[in-house]
Image 1: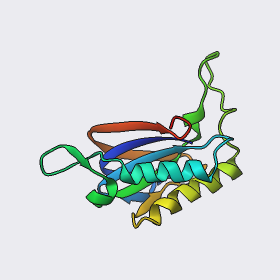
Image 2: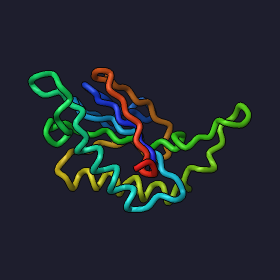
Image 3: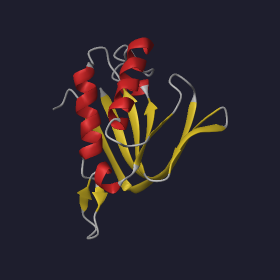
Image 4: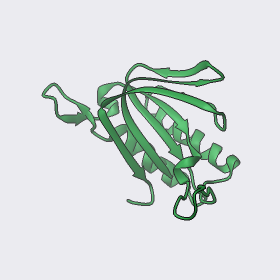
Length: 148
């Protein structure tokens, strides 16, 4: 499982011009799922997201986690995180999980975060979405459950 985390001042996701998810401050998380991913990958990355100390404390140092900060999550499924661009000019998506498997793990990821008391807004799995955000910092991290 691969994710991109962006600390955001505000963010929203729209489908067909209608906003279906929005947060005021917290994390925008782009979630990609591959064939080998399991519940263990989901739990590892969900815990990493909510406990990673990337929010500033009163001294301006990155010392606070999402739980400490009290922010929300905007979670967006994104199979293109497993796009392979090494050959040719068109990405290959053979490493992305099939939609049914990806959806189940994506939903499990969101539930894992919600179970920690953090509000999660989502996009629409498989839809053509427009994501808008104000990256705070900017602060962006890429995490891969296979690189522990």
